[in-house]
Amino acid sequence: MNKNAKIYIAGHKGLVGSAIWKNLQERGYTNLIGKTRDELDLLDQKAVEAFFAAEQPDYVFLAAAKVGGIVANNSYRADFIYENLVIQNHIIHNAWKYGVKKLLFLGSTCIYPREAPQPMPEDALLTSPLEYTNEPYAIAKIAGIKLCESYNVQYGTNFLSVMPTNLYGPNDNFDLEKSHVLPALIRKIHLGKCLEENNWDAIRSDLNQRPVEGIDGRSDENDILTVFSKYGISVHRKDGVTLSEVEVWGSGAPLREFLWSEEMADACVYLMENTDFQDVSPLPSAPGSMHEVRNTHINIGTGKEISIKALAELIKRTIGFKGELVFNTSKPDGTLRKLTDVSKLHALGWQHKIEIEEGVRRMYEWYVKA
Image (tube, rainbow, N blue to C red; front, side, top):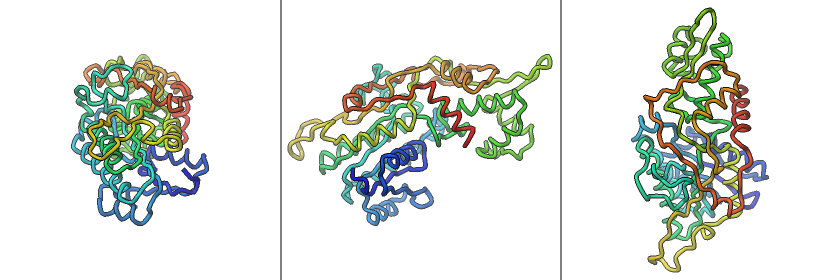
């Protein structure tokens, strides 16, 4: 990519898009385009086409998506499949129509079957049933992979698909209902620590920054405690001592892989600079050929995993929370193990550097300063 090339980052304000934007700037790219939802509604077909017609971007990072954790995915199933399908259809189609040189589509490792072999290789895709709780989201992302492959085969485009593992980092979503497990635990344990220290200034500051169900820093103390209790953050006094508890969904046994979002961005930009679709799957020699083009996506991860219990305890130590972590086994665990096989990524020349302990420390430092 030329340093002056026009690069559109769809979803540039989110966890993924903001990290890619920052990485591109640090590498010296000077012609970046980003539009907020108010400026460009990606669900509006005519608006998206008008944008591509006017801007004519050379490269596209498709990081815009509706995302969330187990609760959000299972509660808003229609929203997750519809909005993600529409967003990626509009952008990928117009990228072809207006001659984008290369596009990178970002999915998720939830595309793999619930019982996929571990670690999960790219060719495990569509080999058995998906995890039910996030099936609509996963199907949308699988459709995005197939859309990129199909445009490449039929039209000769250069569209890549990458499937990052669980991400965390600056600009993450800390909504107690809709966030993923790691940012949710950081916020809940932080608030639990504030409660055990009776630090209401910090609690009110947190709620002013990120209200919960209409409760903000101006709300009554009892109302705050009530909404905290709903999300598993509680405090009580026993023998003159303040004791705090933070609830963690599930048994804590599931294993998860986590990648610092800024490293994910570095991998994405590296692939855009150094990898073409032909490098991951040679195209058929002629249109209509029976040559099969499958599993061309690239896993992005660390190839390392940690249990939810160990993660919660790591966050507890990092934050300095002295209370109790309570594992609610009546809540779903989700997939018990979800580790990516990153051998294809390593073969293409990229490996991670930031381990989970350093990442959690960085994440918490960012959270309290944001």
